[in-house]
Each structure stands twice: as structure tokens, then as C-alpha cells.
Picture 1 (cartoon, rainbow, N blue to C red):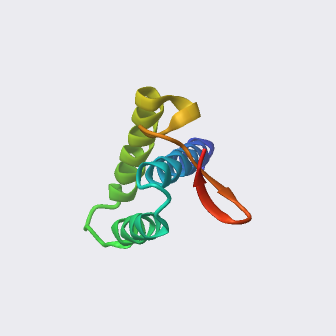
Picture 2 (cartoon, helix red, strand yellow):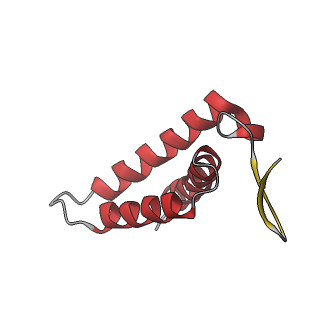
Length: 94
């Protein structure tokens, strides 16, 4: 992987983290929603589309989606409504 590929990979990982946070907050703390999203993205990335560049295109779309979420909701909220926080007693709205 060259420098440009490593930079793209890094930004897609950060965008994926933003999307997971957005999904967790938007689904009121549903781990099932996050697990399904992760599983589906794994399937999409590992499918053989017959196009060698398809994985890069999908990674670019994930990165753009993460940037759109940041632009729409901002980095402090990442979802409409109240933020989900975890405590030692479980999940509570905070």
C-alpha cells in the first residue's frame, strides 16, 4: 500500500468510527444495529464484484458518508436527539 492508499485507509477508518457513533446514538444505544452495520460492511468489502477498484470506491463512499454526518450533526452530537452515555449501571440518557 502506498502513502495515498494508507491515508485513504486511515480516513475511511475514522469515518467508520464516526458512522458507528452516529448509528449508536441515533438508535438509542442499540448494539444490534451497530453489529448489523459492521457485518454488512464486511460482506460488502469482501464480495468479489469483478472490479479490482470496487473496494476503494466503497471505502470512498463510507468516508464521504462519515463526512456528511459530521457536517450535518457536528462532532459533538452525531445524531438528532439526546446523546447516549454509558455508566456502570447501564445506559442512561445524558
